[in-house]
Image 1 (tube, helix red, strand yellow):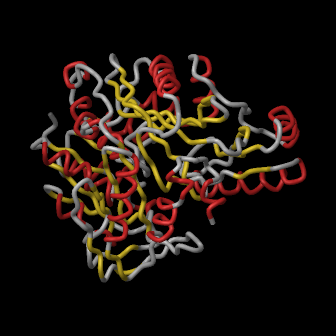
Image 2 (cartoon, rainbow, N blue to C red):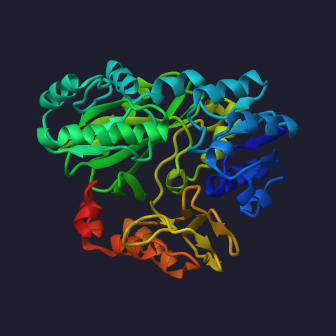
Length: 440
């Protein structure tokens, strides 16, 4: 096991990694921007290194500064968490070149799956189903021809990045040009490259993803999560197992993911859209997922522990001789500091932030009382996970926990989350990616 791991992230995911390191008697090194100095992950780590400034580009996205902090701390590994530099192959190579281990897949996997059209082609060539889509759009003629071939409505998506940013739907030829201008502009501003591609926009589809773990020799699928309830193409509610889908269909999807990704060597997630009984590839996230706790709750595994051990050289066949079964059901709700009506971030000082302790409930919080939610980073306050023997019990525990959270100083989306979870349509598992639009 590593002696010292630098956690190149902040908030809930940094706390999660610090906790795993501490449990392994591995020294954890937190990093923090100037406005994050009082966050819990800084205090809970073995030690901390300052990243001067407050903008993401100067701090958590500054690979040179993070590597300098890792050298000062004499770290022998760097865990990027999710977001920021987690899927940046150049950063992964820089970590390795500096004599430290990058805790994630090899840079070649980050590169292969980081560009969306290349990832689609790879998966299709390796036997994984894909829905209709295009190559990178290079000009107006290619745009109109590709849309006509795929058939309207179409989704324009950046080839880089994620988080639902820059994804625009064009319902007809008249709206296509404006959608293209908006999508390319957003992609350029957010990800530094304006390239986009098209996919068939599947109305009424479900977002289902498969959790994978591998060590380069062995690759296992640790079941699925349904992430269909979204706002602006960003996940709000995740659960496992996916309700109302035949187990045999899920097992086949998992097998095909494993067959397509032979040689994968860390945690990863294959995301798909499920439409009219058929799965099709969306993208692969080559990192720890925000919603990994849902899988941990139903499998009894510690995914971060396994990721750390594999990165340090342990074999998956020794760590996990056989795949565990599914025990019960888990539902996660993402609690954000945001206006529940506009769904826009709502920064402010957390004058009250009290997290309940309840049986069957796990809460991964980014902050504690007295901290400030700033406008510079993701406004995620906490992930609230309810576990139960049945789906109904898991939903109920998540609801009770959300209502028991005490938050003052910022607005939150708690009322929206409760409205979703207690709606008849959610309880009946009538899920699709348009769920929230229909509810509101």
